[in-house]
Amino acid sequence: MSDERRIQEVLARYVRATDQRDGKTQGALFTDDAVVQSFSRTGPGSHAPVAPPMIGGAAVEYAVDHYMAPHPVGGSSHHVTADHIIEVDGDRAHMNAQFVVFRVQAAARPEGGWAEGTFGSQGTVQPIESGYYDTDLRRIDGEWKIVGHRILLDMPYVIPGV
Image 1 (spheres, rainbow, N blue to C red):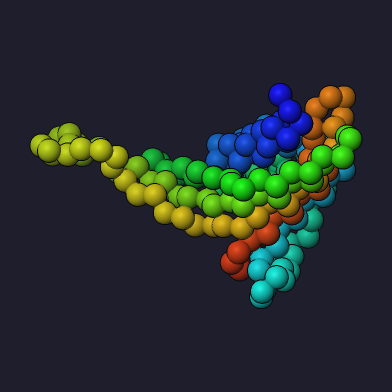
Image 2 (spheres, rainbow, N blue to C red):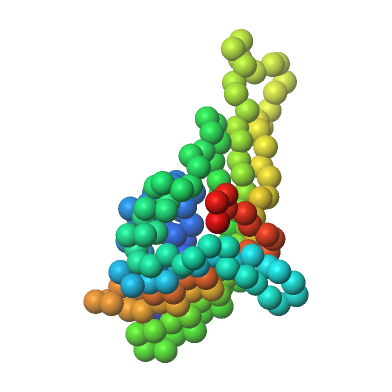
């Protein structure tokens, strides 16, 4: 497998861990000194930090496990990434990818079952976030790890108390 594909797979594992609210898996993708920070768009081509940066995989794990709201019953999130631009220079790499996050809410099965003629998916899918992941990686012992991760959100993002 090419380095570019392995690097793209790191992001695939990252978004799946986010969707599953799996802090341990997500934190393991980062080095102990990785710097992770989210930014909101403030104007054309400009962003401002949403909160102070997190440092290291343990901080990422903690944030996923303690700050992300659990999905409601029948609910989930689904990240989609696209247009990965990957540059590899030896054991260092940079990746920039677009993302969209969808909120998925399954309809509850009626007590008496679905009405006659009901067909297909029952529920809603709604886009809720978009932006770019701007990520620096380093190959350590043959494995690509995230050393810097900037989440560049297309819209303002509010964290209560921050």
